[in-house]
Amino acid sequence: MEDSLFSRDIAAAQAIAKPKRPPNPDTDLIDVHKWFRMQPNLEVRFGQTLRQSIDEVLDGQRTGRFNMKDLEKTEKTYLGTKVEIITRAEFELGRGNKMDFSIAGHDVDSKFTSGDNWTIPREADGHICLLIKASDHKASYQVGLLRIHDDFLNLGANRDGKRTPSAAGRDAIEWIIPEGKLPENILLTLSEQDREAIFKTGLSGQSRTNELFRRVQGRSVNRNTVLTVARQDDSPKRVRDARHHLRSAGIMILGHQKQHPYIARDLGLRVPEKGSWVAVRVAHLDNTQSARRSTRISGQDYAVWKEGDRPVPAPAEY
Amino acid sequence: MEDSLFSRDIAAAQAIAKPKRPPNPDTDLIDVHKWFRMQPNLEVRFGQTLRQSIDEVLDGQRTGRFNMKDLEKTEKTYLGTKVEIITRAEFELGRGNKMDFSIAGHDVDSKFTSGDNWTIPREADGHICLLIKASDHKASYQVGLLRIHDDFLNLGANRDGKRTPSAAGRDAIEWIIPEGKLPENILLTLSEQDREAIFKTGLSGQSRTNELFRRVQGRSVNRNTVLTVARQDDSPKRVRDARHHLRSAGIMILGHQKQHPYIARDLGLRVPEKGSWVAVRVAHLDNTQSARRSTRISGQDYAVWKEGDRPVPAPAEY
Image (cartoon, rainbow over all chains, first blue to last red; front, side, top):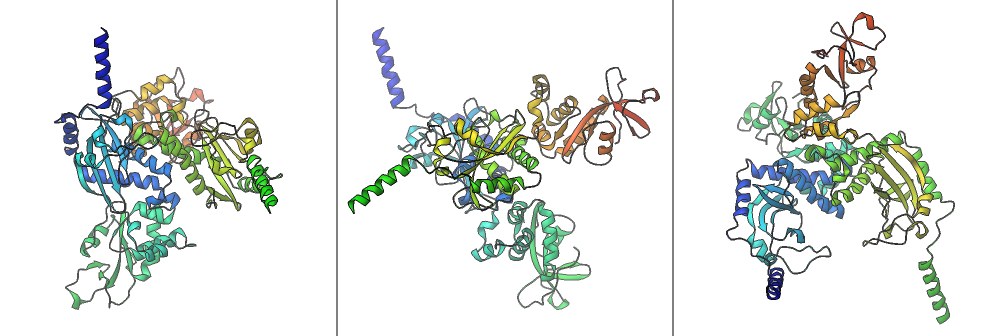
């Protein structure tokens, strides 16, 4: 009896010293991987999930922030929770027994980082993690799966006992989306000069919105960007008013309604999706310039303005 | 020289041992207090700020949660940040030099608790704190000011070095709103039976919405409650469909549009504000019951249904 108790102790000690190797092949992890690969529009949906999560925590309408470096520590921590909540809602995932999600019948933990590496708590040992990483500056994101094991983690733990995947761990990640496109955060991409002009102290929300569409042309500007710049609700109203203010400068702002998508297509612009706008400065087109793309509005042909064109106001109605 | 250095050390040691007493009278704190008292609709605006903060972190539309006990620790921590963000936006406050807000030219730190007491970090020593406390279960909140001083804090600190106001500290709070009304979280007030019927497993979002309006009558149900129950966006659409489903049960759902406010007033119901609804079961009224409050819809008089009334369908159009 004593012997057998003793050998059980040894076995237990060994179990602690050398955690069970992950199953090979890891059929559970393969199930989870397959489940994701079967979801329609997977890459677009993960991209939107991450865009939405980041935008909600930046809370641009209230704070004017568009750069994640301006988030406080509690907000950065919470961003991981927001990603988990929106991912669960987007893919209609249930909760796992011990982990955040149940996917294809398996427990999966959600781990997000906007930095270089993930922090993995002790509780995730032996479990499959959905590792999500996003860079707003690079407008890219990655999603992968890793079954957590000591061999895959760096030795040092932070004061909460959390560790980071090692080089070997990162090599072992099964990528679901190795390189995804995060919808662009247009305010991050502006030149310092444009940014300063838009956010100049003393400008009203409407003036900032006008400045945004004066300076950002031919690119899709979404609702959240307008809210962040205007610091007011009702972004469509701000855009309508900007249309009025920018008319004399020859600038049109096209949305997804009325004839706007056709005008955008005629002019070779990106066709605005619902809740986004594209600004463009236009010029009158006479008969001698038939090679240029143009659109006819109230009997007048307009083309995208280029150097040398005569300055004209934008159409009054479109 | 040595003597004077020595006495400087003593003075420094005394300064550490006995922190400077708060000024008396504390004119800065009085300024801040006056500033808040001058804000129009102060109590309503703080109530809405806290309701909005709690609802955003519960994220009912995505999670179905309506009880703060279901929040994770990171979410509870973040709730304080959300209160700070919405308070800053609601009252258009600037940032302080060292603290969260600049109010009437003075640095003020924001501290929120949904529990019994606040946790005060070392950095707040000597500074004015805006102490905000909310109880969703009691539908109440408090807002006050306290200049942080060792005499006002309990001795024990948590592992982050944060301490809580002592009984003396709580006595010293200058209340701005000693007892405010937090807009009601109606789902928290339901009986267990009603709650189980609404959230019964297997019901669709629309069926849950129908059940909500079947069971909650004569009370204002807001947009967030509908979103939390339906777990879908477009709450007005869910309500319109519920109107159709509940018609045969004699239940009307009144909003703020069309003739609805007049109907509500006629029937002695709370008049729904924008983005909220009031359900009511109605009965036909004949000429012999002229004492009852009634409203005429398409030539038929309706009263609020009571025991003994004949079951009739609600009007088809209203």
